[in-house]
Length: 126
Image: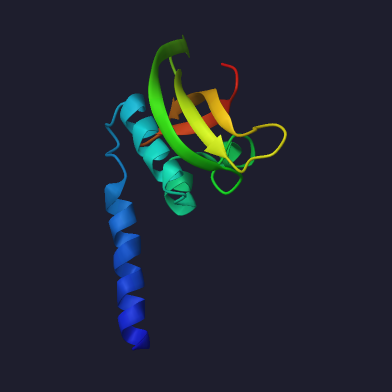
């Protein structure tokens, strides 16, 4: 029985790795995949979309429940190596800094050496 559980667990990890967008995915595709994992409270997957700095300064997974989200049309390209996108998040169970309700949230994505876009910052302002 333990072997079956281990195989099922391994299969789940493999599936998560294959569900990540390819290195050539657009910043919007990466953000949409991240938001889907965030809504599912799948923190292991949300972390795969982020650089280390984002995990300590911007990651919401594990800190509040995102009940739903919708992508916003906002796009900014402050430099050649970063894109800022926005989404409206409906949250529940946060703290005083992110109370229950709708929040316009901005995400900065940067390309990695592999060409993959990853989240590097997130917050209430661009």
